[in-house]
Image (cartoon, rainbow, N blue to C red; front, side):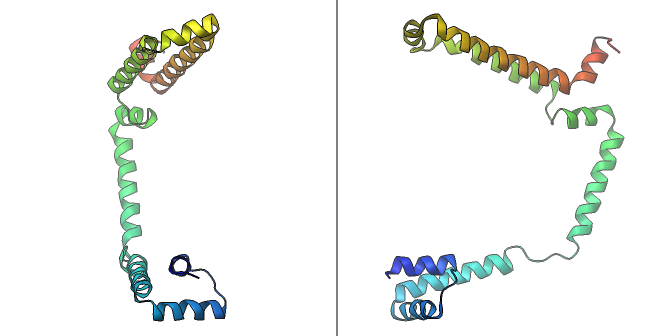
Length: 160
C-alpha cells in the first residue's frame, strides 16, 4: 500500500482488521508526511465534532418561543401576511415582473441567429412542439398566479 491508500483508510475511517491497523500505524510511524496529514485530519475532525457547534441547553426553548411569536404575529397581521404566506413570499408586483420576463423571453427565443436554419431544416413540424411548450409554460404560470392570488383577484373584480 502506498501513501495515498493509507491516507484514504485514515480519512474514510474504515474498519480495518488488526493487521491492517498495525500496517497503517507502522506506515504513519515511518512516514512523517502521512503522519502530519493524519494528525491534521484528526485535529480537524475533533474540532468539527466537539467545538464547531457547542451544545446549547436553552436553544430549544428559545427557538420554540420564536416560532410561537412568529405564528402570533402572522395571525395578527391580517390578510397581507396570509396572502404572502400563500403566494410563497412573492408580491403581486414580483409575479407580474416575472410573468412579463417569461413572456418576453418565450417570444424572443425565435429571434436567435441559429433558429432560422433549424426552422428551415425541420419545417413546420418544429412549430408544433414549440407552440405546445410555450402554451404550457404561459398557461401554467397564469394558473399558479391566479391560484395564489385568488382572494385578492376576486375582491378586485367583485367576484365574491
